[in-house]
Length: 524
Ligand SMILES: Cc1cc2nc3c(=O)[nH]c(=O)nc-3n(C[C@H](O)[C@H](O)[C@H](O)COP(=O)(O)OP(=O)(O)OC[C@H]3O[C@@H](n4cnc5c(N)ncnc54)[C@H](O)[C@@H]3O)c2cc1C
Image (cartoon, rainbow, N blue to C red; front, side, top):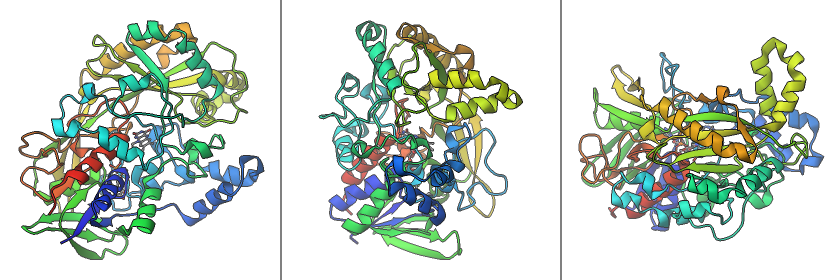
């Protein structure tokens, strides 16, 4: 049998497909495959067909209309909820627990339809608990960077993150706020490094050369310059013969001596089918993968632990005058800068910050906080939102809560969730903020300490570790090729197999690891 099966069309599935097609395999990709509604796509196209200066104000308003609320996970790209639409009734009648902010995606392209596009490789020091084979990611970061555009420039961050080398300047232009902050930090670089704070320009999965600086990144790039696995999968279908099958929710995997069988169900019609292949690569995203694997392994009653990389917000006002006016300035609204704390007294692992400059959600969020007093506070809101920069901090999973997941009983395989708090999370955030604040104040960034707040469990979407890779796996652990103990032809390729989740961005490593597994999986 020369055909392999991939489950899921998100970043993990797309990277696995790339590697398998490179090996000359025929590949069938099974996906639920939700897409943007045609009416919303039409609005996007009407903007994409022109430069921002020529945009019709009505079309722009329509595009922005369904803007997200303040929470990061309620991003509505192009005004649609399609990346988060629960097309398969995943949570059932009980719904998602109210403390759990992680949601599955059932879209073509998965969560990469509405992500922040921040990309960094992991530091080897942060994955010292991974099996040696799984840590050998450098070649696979390079392979992924060959098909994912990475907006970056060679800078001192490279010394910290040597697994991905950046040879030329393909960065997104910083906004004036980003430039000013970087220049001010730059003056103190050596002193800051000596005290454990390192920094550089943010790196994003964006085709920077086409950026019109229209400020719509957080609404969905009208020009589709932000990488989404959707575009990549569509290209693999067009150019390399990937057999993409939407409307196919994988519900069970059965491994036999000569191949695998994946049972699917069409969520709309209820129609069922069976797909046979030599091997299967599971990239359904951590929650759907947990359900599929627990059901397929007959693991009723057994629990797995999902590790979160907790995040928190540090709002900062900048001391310098906001000139030019950030509201009117052409800009992108993705992360501007990365700050990294490397100090064992703060955390045994890297603490990572992503610094955002002005975006038009700031004033709206402040208005929402002021409530009925917002009209009176308008001058204050206008002044503060123009000086606000928000550092979003991330901790390694060692310092973060875990989510216990097991199969609940009943006719439909549903998941039951229990929160396992980590007593270390609060103190670890406090230590990181206490470290950061005095180091950035001399550069004119004034953290608003009373407004520092942790985000909800799972809302970073940097989660994994349910079927962790081990040198010698047992129980529900996986081997370094993502195979749960006992299986030979079933490889999990999403973050479910990460033994731990470092603070730096997750998706580039999800893709590199999927690429590594699909490249190294033994030939059938
Ligand atoms: C608001 C937001 C911002 C983010 N920002 C960043 C960031 O800046 N940097 C970063 O590194 N990461 C970020 N992330 C996280 C990033 O999006 C995920 O890490 C990434 O998408 C995971 O890829 P995946 O392929 O494993 O899963 P997903 O993207 O979840 O894709 C899962 C795929 O599997 C399919 N599927 C699910 N169940 C089944 C089934 N049973 N059968 C068949 N198909 C199935 C779905 O249709 C989908 O195609 C962000 C996420 C969000 C929501």
